[in-house]
Image (cartoon, helix red, strand yellow):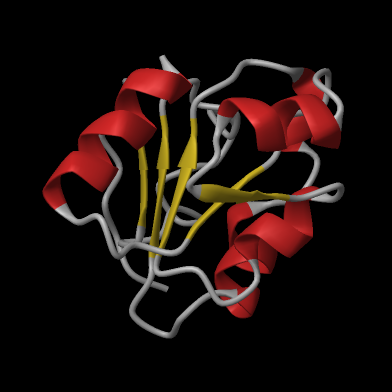
Length: 110
């Protein structure tokens, strides 16, 4: 799924600065597969300064950094879209307007 999302984004906006991270695939393989992207060895390097973070993998390590932590490192108007709902344990009071997840209907601001 990640490949399709990245291809679609770059087809619409070829100038995008895309950073990718995968907890299973080594950085060299990522770099060779996503030639128009920067492969990162750490997930927070991929998040830092981002306008949009897309979590498109269900690996448990991708749920280690809570949305608030990621958002604090991102562009001030950035948002996270989580295809795998890693943070389904967020209650309505802890949800954020700039975190979206499949199956998560809570959209409140902090």
